[in-house]
Amino acid sequence: MSHDQRPARMRVVADAGARGNAVDTSETQNGQAGPAEAVGAGGLPIVPAMIFIIACIIGGAVVTYLMAGAH
Image (cartoon, rainbow, N blue to C red; front, side):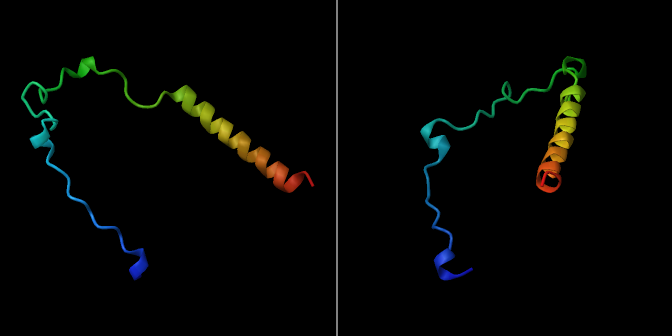
């Protein structure tokens, strides 16, 4: 790395605990998770994901047609 691309010096900031806005680490904040049945079905819904993939394929075909085939 050349001299003119050197990263800037880091500046020291005050401690968050001294200002009173530190992260809450109490037992009530970090309690145990609930039962697994309480969690909904995770992951991406399949129908919107499939619509997105199909739209990407159609968009790619249109771009290919316009760039290569429409001359």
